[in-house]
Image 1 (cartoon, rainbow, N blue to C red):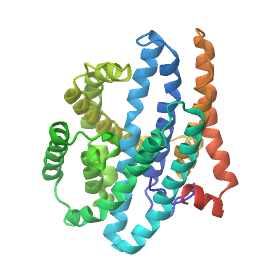
Image 2 (tube, one colour; image 1 turned 45 degrees about the vertical axis):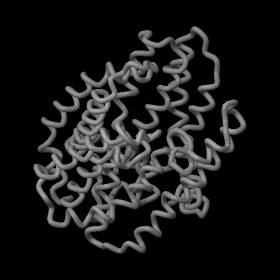
Image 3 (cartoon, rainbow, N blue to C red; image 1 turned 90 degrees about the horizontal axis):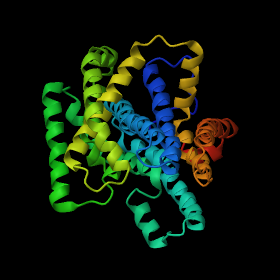
Image 4 (spheres, one colour; image 1 turned 180 degrees about the vertical axis):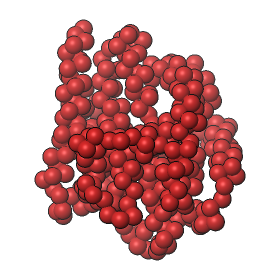
Length: 354
């Protein structure tokens, strides 16, 4: 996650796009919501009313990962178009992404080795090398891949090609990768491969090459992205619920098309809303603070979820819902406290890359 400051200021410096900081906060909360709701999915019967409600909300929040990629791409494209210094670019990414990924991969792997009866050091080493060291850490693996390829793609957008040319090419590449993988490669962790997010990255490059027009563009797209998000969500959710229920008869092509369509459209729609809404000052400041510590939230929120997932809830839905609420609060409060304690220290740089 491209996170230029440790804490987002109330009055951002000149040239900074405050709406992106706000939307980063929204995406960070969505990511926490995805994993917190997993408690309900893990501890209630499949397709029960509570399970279904949790599953629908869980899948609707799935815009979080593509949105982080979109935001990162916009910001880095903007930066590289102004200063194409690859040496400094890659040196900084080693600090902000590679070092935290390796450190937290080791920490989570050691913890998994102590509590997971099916743990295998061979499998763990393979996952670390393929960017899938532990569940949510796959996102840092994707970000590292983005850092490698993005400087190679940015020059293609210096002349600001029209979206009517860019979008069909992106869709063609995405579909081509899907079928190539299905017919030939059969990669084990598709969500950990940057090629799985071609459309998201391409739109981010296009928007990043014209950030002066960013607000007007995504606002103009609001009716289209809103309708597309709604239509894709209606088509996507039945497949998504069957998928998280573990059914083997889910038609994967439609499922992936609907997921791509929903997550990208929803992310762009919510970004447009972020730019349009007149925010309550307290809510705005809180979202900016969450966005400013998105890396801390991302890396630390799994610990409370992990603990609460090992509690036995039995047939007590109220107890489970209370656990979800407590987990949600702790998953946000704990990273905020850690961020405050380590603010502008070497420990913060070591653990979170910033």
